[in-house]
Image (cartoon, rainbow, N blue to C red; front, side, top):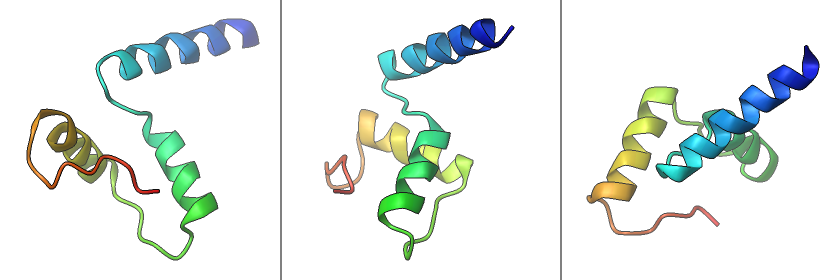
Length: 65
């Protein structure tokens, strides 16, 4: 059963990366590890930010570091 969960996670992760949508949990883990003093976006803010980054809007910067 654990292998099936890992497979489902990998398929979902690959699908999100194919459409340019990074995983929210990975974003939160990165922020907590490397930017613990900075606020963490909600899932809705994260989703909107990623859409604007991919399809326009903002200043074109797509990475935090």
